Image 1: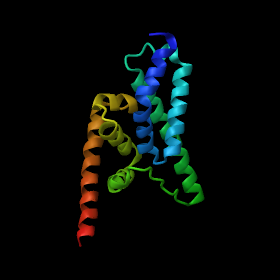
Image 2: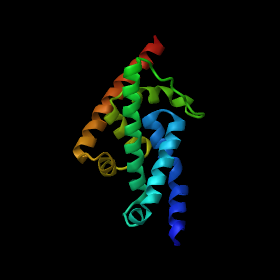
Image 3: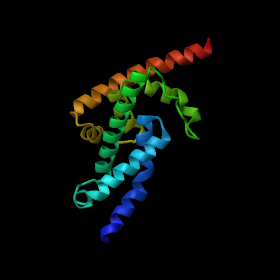
Image 4: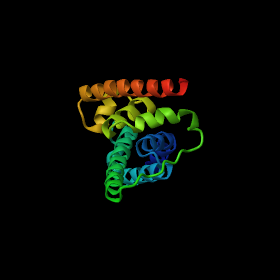
Length: 163
């Protein structure tokens, strides 16, 4: 494959999945698209290195997660300083999953990242561990605790609706 063709193919095959990963972490489609574009710009700047890694998509996904974390931290600091909440924007087609997304947002950021990468991006635990730079056992623990928290929260919301 020619020098630029592999990168174009990587972009075409990975863009949607990476945007969804960023959206799940940032909860803002515009920011998710910006983060994904920025990650691909970083990857293009380092395309010689990226072309030699075992999984270029995983490399770009790790950049997406790191950029999303940076934005999330900045936004959290700004919210704290300004004492206000950022309104949530929900893209078309996500309406039926609002309860689940709200429950995921209620988790701590590190738990959110593990859930999003494993369950929404459908990545294996070892790849999630690599992206988050934590041991596999830590990812498994976070997933277990997140599942328990989500189950309790979703059960409570269902009970409230049924009452």
